[in-house]
Length: 311
Length: 287
Image (cartoon, rainbow over all chains, first blue to last red; front, side, top):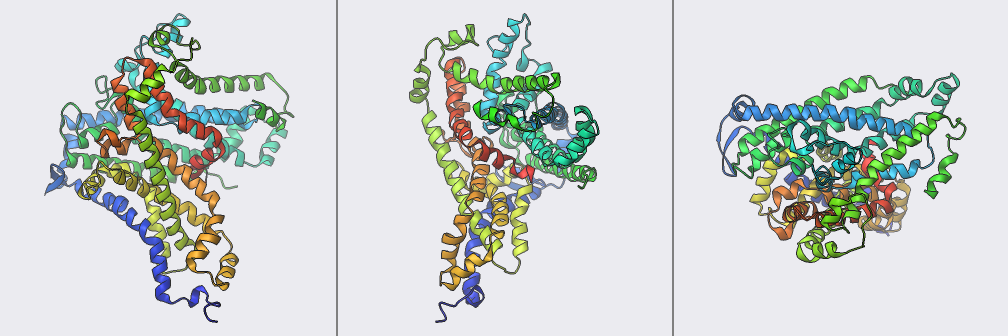
């Protein structure tokens, strides 16, 4: 019987094509309509003036000119960008620095290290909304847990989110608490991939923990460091949920916590106070943010990859 | 801590128990405290009254009062938000698994023209943050009448999940041996049958990774509902929490209860499946 002996190649070509098309079509259709098309239009829309929700006139680079050079828009843009840079630098030092130390400590496999991994990763699975509200309550100047704890040792805590000098720093610290488990476990996995022989050999040559970390682990950890750095960069420039929950849509107090994500959202979807909505300027901001993230990521990948050692 | 004690016989023991080891252990304990204590206070405070929270924030609750839970359960839309989150997350993950696996199966198991190109098309979605395309996406959904609906939200999440699902499933399915399906075909099984009863059961571990990797960010997402959903009855939990926190600003006991109840489901699932969660979430970065 032919039927029993049929193989893939014997299938009617037409039926085989139909079967493959049937498998591919749903995913391809959803991707095209909800990812590919919006992404491509995002670039086009930045060159239009909008009338409500629909593009009306082609205005060339006008939207870009406004957000980059025309006050007050440009002031907001540069103020927000400045804060994104601070967030990135602070997270690199505080979050990833802590993560590196923790990963190195966990590498020693002391009693309790597995439980510790589960605990340190616990906040990572929570929504930014929960983390943001929780720390907003804890940072309350009078009744918050933090200032109550400081009062126990006789210190008078600041207003944290209530004053310009400490607001951004407070949100950054909440972010460190939320995410530190992620780089910790990524770096730990990277350290565990370094071969035992290399580490033992260094030990036999009399290397202490400091030398081991600086001279052996750090260079060999380069691929993981690259990934963590790039993810931190993307995360810092897409920062939105935590400042939105903890400081509000306008980056209060006084714009001291405003970042590009908040400014973009206000421009595109209207702030609660003004209700003005400008899809043209918003699209220009989105394109600029995309180019910034893609550009820096590409350059950083090239630079960081160069220091990765092949083993 | 019993599980941890048995792990102690690792590389640690042949090192001398120096001051340094003690210092490292102290550092880890301090860190564990900083990570866990805020969550402990959150849960403890949900049993307290306002007065209790303000005067003795560190103490255990004097009574196990469920008054706050009852208030959240009956006087707010919390249960509705919770149900919406469960429904939207389950539907999105299911859709991602079904359409993602179908596409990956075609790419991994059949040779056809442009298959590399098709794979590239899917993978291109992995690198771009869809949030930055929210304006055209919003216009698109508005044109299709999908704003302020479950369907719009689910389709957006599905579209975001497909690239990594196709990536993981293609890698896994391509590694399965060809002999299995060949012998089934010789026995006369149809292509559909080969896929459903021979190949896909073997791909279950990869499906678990895909499911967790997508379920966590979808469950936690705040950005897309914020823009796409306006009716209170359609709001998901993170978005609903902002409504709830606005209504009860001065009743801290109720606020902590809302946060605890919102955090509880995912925390319990995480503690039960921590290994899979950690693998699923760090997967992309560790590769």
